[in-house]
Image (cartoon, rainbow, N blue to C red; front, side, top):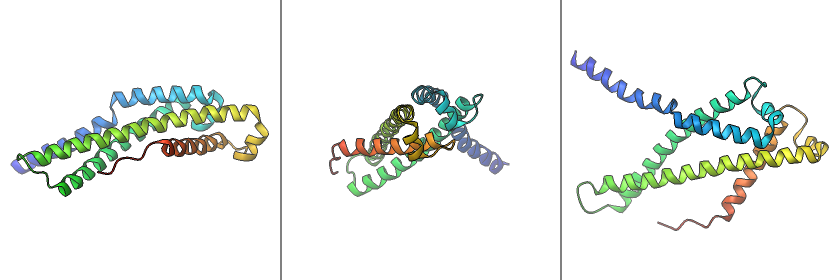
Length: 180
């Protein structure tokens, strides 16, 4: 009986944080804010072509973005901790009994913060790309169709390509990280 209760308690402890992160209201609010900015940047017709019909495009955007953000956050936190453990092991942290734990905690937080900053920059790139593509489509529809096609996904192709170019340019401008 004790083993059964222990197993139930452990499974609850494992499942509860995952469920909480999937339903995090902050993630939903950030996703809603992002989708509003993307819709405004792209224009409603282009936004609809990226996410679905007029009725549900905004909802699909929010849902997809919130799910993607939650999944990315979990993966980034896991990767940050794993990298921090390796770095702290390599340093052979001297000092108190908890020096290794403090080292891992500090490095993992710093790595997660850097990943969050990059995510924010990527979202900004995508919004800027949507604005750029909207202008390009308006200025020369024929060239836009030649470059990205005339199908329903043409605007999405333009946003994806332009956002990648903006991210590459932004990364090229950033100073190199100092060696540890």
